[in-house]
Image (tube, rainbow, N blue to C red; front, side, top):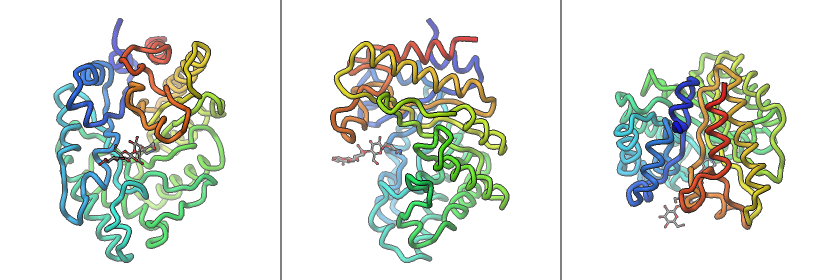
Length: 318
Ligand code: G3I
């Protein structure tokens, strides 16, 4: 039957996957699924600061270009991830004083966004990532310590200047349902837009776990952002479980995947859903959460799981 991307296109949504450069270069099965099933690509690591500007003003494009070239060959869009984050950012950035740090941030954005500004495949960027802590306060990152919250507006303005046509997103985790952190995100986006800061889009990462339950009021949360006039999207979906897999955990995971797709389908301004990888062969989850895994829609041998069928059928319904 038809691919995920065909069904998503018929619903006016994208269906995306994060890709890693090494299997993309080395495994035909990986390339085959990535190209046929998904309409949008995010680089899992290749566009982050440590990959693109490891030393000051010395840019390294091989990984980022590989992702963009693959997407171009396969008529896919690219969502750029990520310009300003507290993680995977070289020490040289973190050691700068305030003025130099602001200039380095603006230069980084100008060069990275500028490289792809005229490339029709690259349509959007995570401009800032994870600016909140788990309570919904501003994260006390090196960015915040040196620059206060001004770095956020400055980053969006620099990105707009570098590519007036790209959708500019703020992205975070644990903001899928209505909760204190998503309300903090909502208030920040509303305030930034009231100051004409060019925030176009809100990304909800969606790193879920079946043992923690499905977040509450996801559709209402999407809708309140949409009502601010911004696009909303799921950017990094994975739904982990305590290992080993069994049929009942797979079924619950499949339900959660359908819930995510259905929430996006129900909100006009939800542009699509990206999954943080696609095969359990390559996932950050087991490295980070001991004893957990199997968070994606294909198993380690590239066989589709019940979660694949759930995504497929949710996109195909209606
Ligand atoms: O590149 C080095 C390599 O040179 C070295 O030999 C190897 C040994 O450990 O590490 C490699 O770096 C790893 C990198 O992924 C690339 O594979 C890092 O150790 C590892 O920590 C890093 O993990 C990534 C993580 O972000 C780091 O923050 C994951 O792959 C990636 O899935 C994850 O993605 C994040 C999103 O960007 C933001 N939201 C949360 C999400 C999950 O943490």
